[in-house]
Length: 161
Image (cartoon, rainbow, N blue to C red; front, side, top):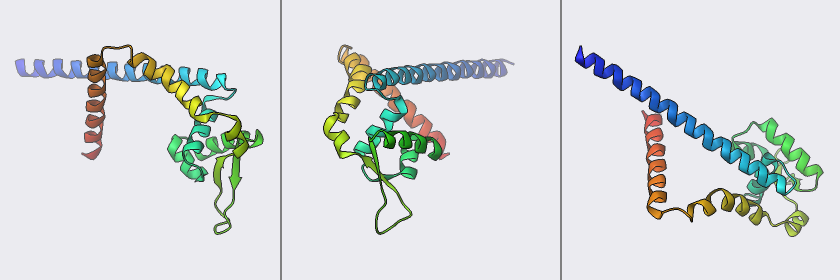
């Protein structure tokens, strides 16, 4: 009876811990989304539009399919975002001569000249992470990094089984 009781308590604890981890991850995701929306709005874009701009800046010539995979969004969702940005003169679609069935996406050169895309991304990252981390105890930051790495490894181990 004692063994079954311990097992039941262990299962309850694991369930509570699972629920807490999911709650924390949801809170972090919500905070990131809110802060990214604020950053994007500052530049006159939606968060998904700014994400497309940053992706295309880092990976010029990427296809719509590749972009949707990188952003983990459906192709139709990304296509709509790209359409709006193309109408605004931000994104350029190019059809290569050697393969007329593909469309390569990149940032318009005039847009690049008139906008500091690196700064757009940095302002979000600085506001979200850098400014907070640099004011923390380095040991505490290291513990956070270690915990996140361990959790990531734990999840990867689960995938391989």
